[in-house]
Image 1: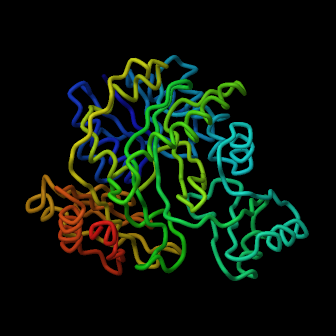
Image 2: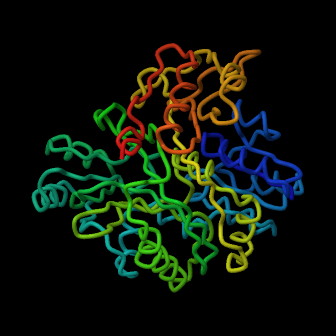
Length: 416
């Protein structure tokens, strides 16, 4: 099988790494990729938002499967353009990807499907914003209705900060605050069948102790030793399957990766948000634990034959990912700084720890930072404590001027 992956972050590096280890994958391509992905896949330049260009590249390469990683190309309809030329693609249509592209659309689908979520208002005027903020009170949860790369949500006790964020958005969803721990659960779908993966937890705030601004995610771990063993079955029954059924009923079947961000509240499981693609950095830990070869599962999704997929096999190991971010992330991150220590990790920490590149590029012989989140250092171990120790040992070898990372990823869970 020849596979083309679209995207260039750590999520795509994780996907490419798993696909490169799959004996059924005979050729692996990525567009546009990054300096780390170049070690396992052949890179190609492409405008990943241009469906015609992506479809042309897939045709030229003779791809048997295209995997669209990021949300923006999905919402832009890139998967539709690839399907139109007859190539199987893992990723929802532009219409179905609105589940992530519009918070208001997602709320409407959840209402139709009877999926439990936070009460909310969709606001477009200052008066509506003030009314909604007054109705819910602090802490205020304000979400940009459109795509914002994981950074469009403000949760604050400061009403003026909440109002300022709301006024900066064209359309905004203001909703009640959901208490309780958060869980990410991914499911591979083909429009009818839903195949859940293992849950993970990510860390959205920039600083230790869940302080600082929201980011795209500073680390993750899996499994969740504190979670109810029946959690996956419950979420499949009350959230994932009803959502896929509702989208099919509306004539916009969801095929690809459905990501449910969940709050385990005192009143039960509630959906915080849906995404239409693998989450970053949770993908890094979930795929580290998946034993079943990945390409066949994704192809079943693309072909609508997921019911034929054998039950997924999982490693007993735990996995932890720590994100190394550039100076001043998430505000205006500095780029172009050389990254050192990668060869030492490959020599001394493999195979239990490895580095997945997020925002990197090659500059002559050097690899330099090229984004806010630069690297995802991922490690496995017999339990979370060992995986965490291995991840942080590898992080300690990385030299990147001004870089930052959280020191408490999976700390509480490892002691559970």
